[in-house]
Length: 395
Image 1 (cartoon, one colour):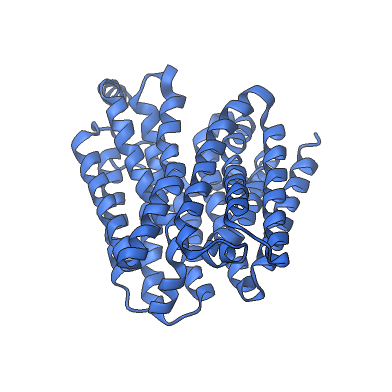
Image 2 (cartoon, one colour; image 1 turned 60 degrees about the vertical axis):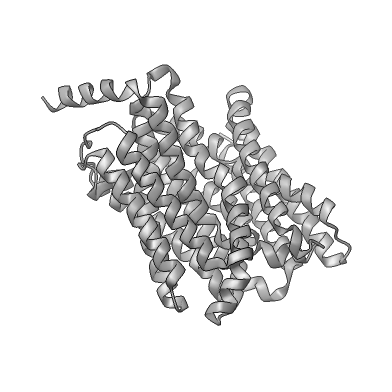
């Protein structure tokens, strides 16, 4: 009887699937903006809270680690909840957490609010991806998934630069307040437009994590951690890092936009290229491009001969190479565990945030050594990712 109800609900959902999918993408846009926006106003946040930039950057690390840890746990706990209720509540939590971040008087309370924001994001993003597949006809399912996940990459292109502008004009607290408002608007949109869908079967956490014991899966996920860690060693501290390569304060928004534009382009091109040439070739090219872009930025920083136009080209390549990873990595995971594809992809999402957290922590430790050291270290981690890929893909 429950299966009949699920099938009927899914059939009703497909009638308005496209509109609902776009609303879901607004939610992932809010999540992506929230996750990455701090990079644009990290120095001013640090000054307001009377801490170092490295210490303030740990708010990014905490968000990422909390997301990675909470995603499988909360997916298990909330599995039976109706999907619309679950997604609306997740966005409300995200909005209230950002409001708390905007009002935080000190770093400990800011960190606590970022953990709460990570909980909302960890419930929403995997849930929105799963729901989007049920909202449309099977023949356009991949397109719907691309729209929803695309909200994250579009956030790096539009949401983060706009947040940086808001932070520059009105202060970082206002910028986070705007993210809170965006989250609540998305929650209202999901509540009003998304059709009702029941929850799914509860998959025990032990069963979810058992997938990690499969060699084919275990050899893929560390690569996601390394690749994202390489990029975010610098990205969370992009303002001081880009100053080191000759980018003036007034051009930071443009640089963040170029990074985001590269991210969107890299994600789209990687999907097409993976279908045509296979995931390993695409990943290999992406990691080599990341090594080149970060290494050259490091050389420019060390030489002190940087300029904004040169930096812009390298930042565009850096953003593209970072987000080239996701489609081929998901492809490899689905090939490795076709019957547990949703679980495998959710573990990859957790790995993305582990990499972001680890990279941000590494960048915070080396921030005092100067931009050239940060770029060199990031390029070294990207090179390690390339070596790991070639080693694990030999078979």
